Image (tube, rainbow, N blue to C red; front, side, top):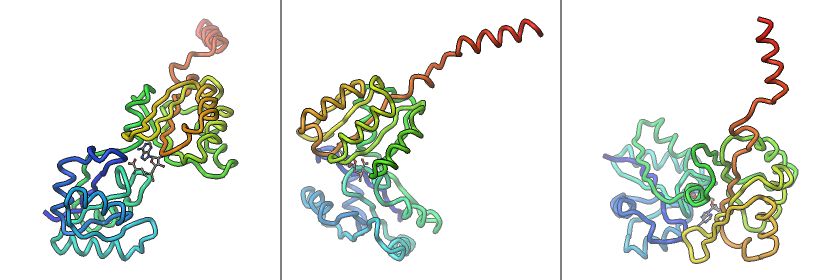
Length: 248
Ligand code: SAM
């Protein structure tokens, strides 16, 4: 059945491409790729000759409509991004909506996603987590966003650019406090893969003192706020409630 396949590709280690992903990429009539050069490397390494076309952030809405028309006409198409899962801090969700609204089939394939790989190796609670993507670039907006997240009762997952990691850690430390645990997951699945979990003060010092720790690709994770998690009743409030109960 014709469909748009959402195909996750490796975030570093090429061995992470799934057998099903390769089958789909070789079977479809066309691959819509965020960067055809980068995807071309993956395809040529696997001996796949499926034609590509560019689909990225700045693609005109007509590109999505053309793709929908091709699927409606009986073809299957795969969507891939530069790395990892399309639509996750990557283009694609609008394309998915266009297809759905046209009554066409979407088939998402499981595969690498830096946020999930980082979370699974971080040692931070994963029963509740929130993906925050990239923080705002500008200092002021970034701090405001962090302040709004200070009491989140879930592990927070951020993507961060290497040249901003120190500034972001410093902001995190000043908004969340020295002792809040966090983790850096850097260069996941690649040769210099590094994962470290520590209180913010320690993590911040470590990254500031070792320039290697702000190189490459980074997922930053923040432990849930303790005052929300297992929140205890304020003792004074407890006494007040007891007092009220006694008078009832
Ligand atoms: N769609 C991708 C995914 O599923 O992970 C994410 C795309 S987003 C534009 C790119 C960001 O993901 C990078 O700036 C970095 O924060 C994170 N990232 C991607 N690959 C990574 C890796 N191998 N190790 C750590 N972080 C990575």
